Image: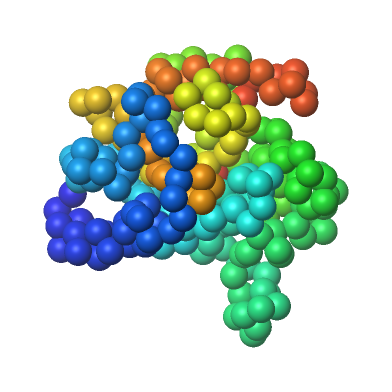
Length: 240
């Protein structure tokens, strides 16, 4: 936490750019969720002892470019944060960076095409395979194969360490939001309240929120009707 104190003004500025009222009005939150840009949400962040992922992800925060690209936007954030070799982005040539337009390389398109994802989104297993197409280490966890306690342990450990990330696949409706399956990265954990911070990539719809571990787990333990499997989470790190 000490190394963050000197950067607090920068954190507040970046938080305003991503989470504040500078963007379009969002949908109202149910009472069980805490807006990161609220006074309470900011306090939880500064008290968190497991927030190594927050600053790197905020630096590379990406809003999904269409209503089905939550997994793509989340993946792009993580890939850019891991600083792995990126493809050339036509709009930024000759510079290289992962974007939602160049994410689907040849290997990724063998998993699922961008056209299909734009229509139907992606499943948890597809998310894992798409990330693997970019030379990173990926472990996929379906909720049916693990537990709340195991998820909490793995997620807190991940958030307390640098250079690895965790993406959650959950059902919005189960969390009191509107309405279907969604994917976004976790950025921090607050031990006293047992809440995780979700950096929601649909910034035009919802802000980043703090949610209890139990409620998040219940939302991940729902069944994705596309594949008749439970949702869950993915752990991502750079290859040695």
